Every structure is written in structure tokens, then in C-alpha cells.
Image (cartoon, rainbow, N blue to C red):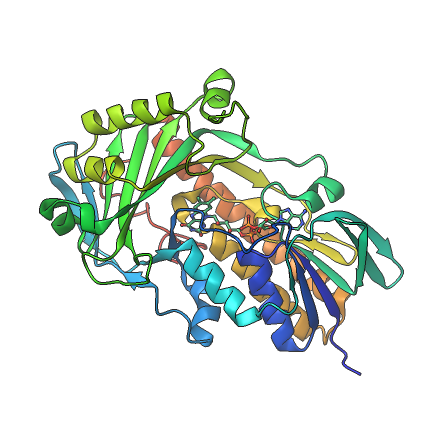
Length: 392
Ligand SMILES: Cc1cc2nc3c(=O)[nH]c(=O)nc-3n(C[C@H](O)[C@H](O)[C@H](O)COP(=O)(O)OP(=O)(O)OC[C@H]3O[C@@H](n4cnc5c(N)ncnc54)[C@H](O)[C@@H]3O)c2cc1C
């Protein structure tokens, strides 16, 4: 009989799948329970790939559809380059990461349409109640169920996400439809423009067929705009059917008047290349920006991981990396504890709490600096992506 525990993972996205693969590789029996009834769809957005996110895909030879850019530039409203630093960050689409991980884990133990609804500690085990009156028992329950985590609501009801006062308008444009000038500007550069209490960044990601050739890629934009809490925020998050969405407005759900206002500002305030990317986007969505900090991650034999425990503002591009780092650390702790779940969680919790607090704090400071205080200056060397610090 194996000494490795049986593990149930609630949430089958980046954090849940990474952890499931690593624990299975150790020798655990792992089942993933994902609320969504269908495989997760593209969030319509590009992703900055930090090393810890790519590590598992690289080990399995599945990181072909990840690409690099050579320059990190800032431009002004006329398009003039204010600063240009050589850089080597890597980029892809959310789907590439998800499909890569799902391909490694396989379908057999990936249960769609399985929503975690309750958690009951048992002597020597933990019971997870799932939708459809199902119950599963495991030695360890990993809750990777995202920023709106059901598990966190059950285990830490006093902790909830805090709205940051602004949202990210995000979208993807086909490079093929851009003008020669825009294609040239974006060929090998990530481009920022700082606006009044706002900023936008634009960069290439592999195209829908995975191509990284110039002309066949997609161009991703992320434009941070302030909507104060209350009426203004409620209005932007109310969709075409009058439904108030909590965190994200998926493509097609944003009301026409907001799309028009956003486009009008884009044509007036953005550098020509950046405006062109925004105005020609095939998909546009809104991600509201939140901070979330938990003061515990371990509850007997259950733990909170990834966005369920800490949600990081996107300025550091480390939300996925944080979820993956939690998974790698859990596998490492379980190995060091020889498969003893309680001992492993004891080893795991404190360093992950410290990492979560540090990265949430750094991303909050960056967001406040640019969106609230309006203090970001083009070329600032500290304004870089990273989980542990700029460039780290
Ligand atoms: C539009 C967008 C762009 C982003 N860009 C970046 C980026 O460039 N770089 C970066 O590092 N991060 C980025 N992030 C953040 C990143 O996607 C998250 O930080 C990361 O996905 C966290 O992974 P997770 O597995 O913890 O949570 P999530 O990815 O949120 O996954 C949670 C999963 O749990 C499922 N679930 C929810 N409730 C239950 C339940 N009760 N039972 C079972 N399953 C449940 C959900 O369906 C979902 O699949 C972006 C996020 C968004 C929305």
C-alpha cells in the first residue's frame, strides 16, 4: 500500500491542475473537481509567463506556444518612444497554459460539473460535499477555487476581496488586421503608455493556432481605468441584460454605451498604435481589480491555494505564478514530510502566507502609485513583472 495520501482538489484551473499533477507525480491518488460543466473557455486574455508558471509545462515539453519579446518601451500620446529597455519576459494566452496542464493531467480524474459546496473534517480525513448530493472523502482537500472561493467563504467567512477602485479593460486583436506601422511598433516590443491616473500596456502573444510568427500573432491590451466604488463601479459591472457581475465582464456582456465611451477615449488619448489595437479588438472584456489577503491557509486537512487565498493585482503579472508556486511548495512539503498530510501542511502554510502577503502588498503599492497617486514615470526600473520582486 502506498504511503502517499489520497487528494481531492476543488477547482480545475491553473492552481488546481498544477498541484494535482505535482501531487500525482509524487505518488498520490488525485481527483480534481471543477464546477464548470465544460472545459474552461479562454478568458480572452494574454498572460505574462513567469518561470514558475512555465516550469511544469517545460518539464513535459509543452511550452512551445510561449514567446519572448525583446523590448519594454514607454510611449507618449503621439507615439514617441520615451524609454526603451531590453527585456526578456515571456508571453502566451491563458488557454495555452490551461490546455497544456489539462493535457498533462488527462481527463480520467478531472471531474467537470462538480462544485464544492461543503467541507466536513473527519477523524484522519476530510469530506467534501459536491453538487448533486455527492460526497468524497480524502486525506487532503486542496481548495483552488479562485477569488470567489466557496471554501474560503466556509472556512474564513470574514475575509473577502476588496475592490481597488479601478478595472482592467482587456482585449485581443489579430495582428494581421493592423497597419504596417502598428505591426512594426509591436514586432518585438511590449509598449506602455501612462495616462492621467490610468495606464495601458500592449504586447503580442501567440495567435489562435499557436503561431509566434510576426503577422500571425494576437495582440493583447490591458488598459487600467478608474471607476470609483459605488454607482460608477456598479454601472460598469452591469451587463447588457441588467445583471450586476461580481468580478469579470466576459466578451459580449459590456453595455454599448460603455464600449462607445471607452473607444472614444481610446481615439483621443492613446498613441496611434495603441488606439488601433484597442479599436480593432475582436474580444473585449473587463476584469475588476481586487486585493484579497487571507490570514490562514490551512484548516486541519483542507487548505486554500492560489487566488482562493490571495488575489494579486495584475501589475506584477504574478497571479498564476503565485498559484503555481503554492502547488510546487505543497508537493515539496509533502515529500519532506514523507506523505504525512498534517505535518506537510504545517511546513507549507507560513512561507506561503508570507509570499502571499508580500506579492499582494507589492502589487497594491504599484496600483496605488499609478492609478490613485498618478506617480508612475516612464522607464521606472522598479516597474517590472515578478513574483518575488521586479524581474524575480
Ligand atoms: C482576464 C484575466 C487575465 C489575467 N492575466 C494574468 C497574467 O497575465 N498573469 C498572471 O499571472 N495572472 C493573470 N491573471 C490571474 C490568473 O488567471 C489567476 O491568478 C490564476 O488563474 C489563479 O489560479 P487559481 O487556480 O488559483 O484560480 P482560478 O484560475 O480563478 O480558478 C478557480 C477555478 O475554480 C473553479 N471553481 C470555483 N468555485 C468552485 C467550487 N465551489 N467548486 C469547484 N470548482 C470551483 C472555477 O470554475 C475555476 O476553474 C488573469 C486573470 C484574469 C481574470
